[in-house]
Amino acid sequence: MKYPKRLKQGDRVGVVAPAGPVDRKTLEKGLRVLGQMGFCPVLAEHIHEKDRYLAGTDAQRTKDLHDFFRNPEIKGIFCARGGYGVNRVLSRLDSSIIRENPKVFVGSSDITLLILFLVQQCSLVTFHGPMVAGNFGRYPMTKSKRQFGEILSGNKTGKRLTAKGARIFRPGIGEGKMIGGCLTLLCRSLGTPWEVKTRNKILLLEDVNEPLYKIDGMLWHLKQAGKFKGVRGIVFGEMVNCLSPKKTGGSFKEILKDVFAGSSFPILTDFPSGHGREMLTLPMGVEARLDTKLKTLEFKNCGVL
Image (cartoon, rainbow, N blue to C red):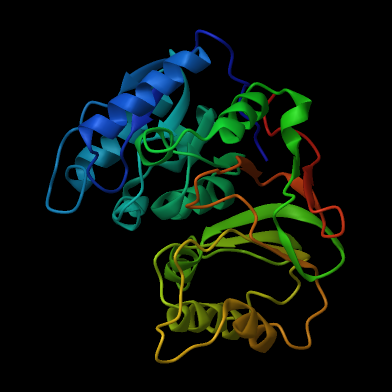
């Protein structure tokens, strides 16, 4: 794996929208947060474009990504928000540009597919974390902001994450490289060149606003595709607003009992990484140790040089 250089105070960071269109007010709030952290945000050329439900055309969004990776003055790239559209640009991306210019890249939600591309196709450690408008522009995220700054700057206190509010579904300890993200997007990756590779991995799964029967279906999809074979552990995010209709009933825990019957790897749920009001930043592609008893996820390093 290639490790990007750590970020420091005063660094210029690119803010890009590879998926859905960006709300100007929440973006402005998020940009102020980056400034308070000591970064100097630079907006992508087409960040305010809108093409139906996309932040500009596929060509424009691809160009913005290429431009920021090529630009030596840009030390990191932060996504503004998710939404929809990353799957439309992946086949346009030039992986050689990215491999030759490794730098910190942070995103989540629809950006899950881009994380898979960067980690698996480009061998670049990439960060699943808060987005400028989608997260920093909406919530205070006090704990998340602190850990975000720590891990991206190489401060070792940012690589050991404790989630006191997490719940143990299956106890145990698991070790492996971290991968994963939004459950919907991981399922969307199946059958593509950037299909998620889960063997010997610690797998992050999270989602938002999906009824439980869809969560059930997506987990069974991953299982039937063999994606839980050889997994070393699973960390579920908070699964925000993923509820069952009152008429049908059922619970998330019941789904897990069905899907993971007979498996032995540790599973921790309600971890603050996803679409919640707090979102810890995880270095994808870095060795991690999941300890359900301690409710910790500890990385071998911060994912930066």
